[in-house]
Length: 472
Image (cartoon, rainbow, N blue to C red; front, side, top):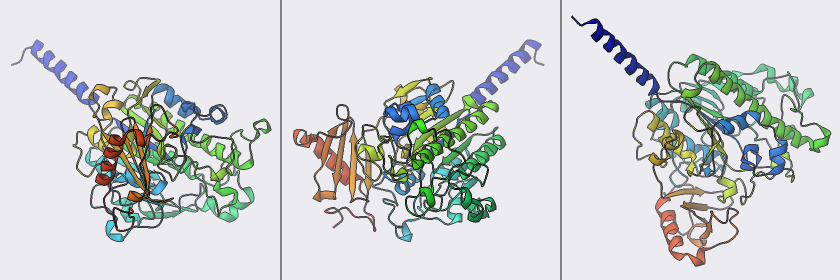
């Protein structure tokens, strides 16, 4: 027989062990990936005075104030399809099945034979959900999306059919569901500010994401929220597709905004409201200290949807924009929020890219990074243990619009080359030349030589997309 003292000691020990087990539970992850949201249009980055003063994102501002801002965060590629392909497959552009938006690759390259993001998250112990622009490029069959690791998904099959913020249908777990409230004959007379008319799909994603969180609050969950804001449709839809429930105050004449600018800014603020709703739900359920919320964008800025005005400098000081592998095409905002772990108001220079998400999720579930993954885990950075952060030598990109392009980050150095071996490598020191204005290639041939080696090593031959002089 155990004494009362022994029984008490055992009870205390069990309580301690149970507490440690609960504390050791992997964090929930909510990853919000916006569409074409240039880093210069994120007020808390303070890269553009007009954006900072005019665009209202109070909830994203709160995430930044309570979390960590990444100074060197990068998209997987320079346009939506290839970028999301890198995110969902864990592959950089030199290995990915999708390397441009310009049409599908041969069937044998898709779907890939290696695990995708949802599958990796599920194997790491997460219950998974995907919302919105889930396609990794082109158009997928519903069963393809369903089979790649999502316990629940709501969205669209491609990166074109999801562009309307008021879709006439949506896909839920592989089944097409009409949205009768969005019948065009019902909406046309109210465009482009619809008020209570119709269903704004971004609101629907937030509704269902909150429902998913409540349903799965007692188990680790991973949510991929693939927003389409503020992407418009530059050619076919009235008002360039920038339909919104309200103008959020941007129609104030003293602001001097064009109609398209008002709509564009209103969509960003509407998205911010949904970010706030999701954060509030996490707090109300007592999950705030158990949940990492990450907010980012899929590539650099694209301003054609609001008429290419000079009101906002969407990429701040960075060179070029979407569809280029200069910094303006691939450097993106990234804010991480994890109260109790990530220091409020902190900043990191840890360089990371979207194909780091997959190994990070694996790490959180105590799973090893596999050879299929091109990224590294940044869990140590998120967990406020920078001294434990895995190091990397370089980052690599490859892209095939506006001509074939390659880019390499090698510490402080940035190498860029157009047109394969027929082009010269440009070299920039990002610590002193963030705008990539001064080509230093002639002064540092040894760095250029190393970057050239990386460009050759990381390019994997693809039947559709070729690098001149390499695949000839």
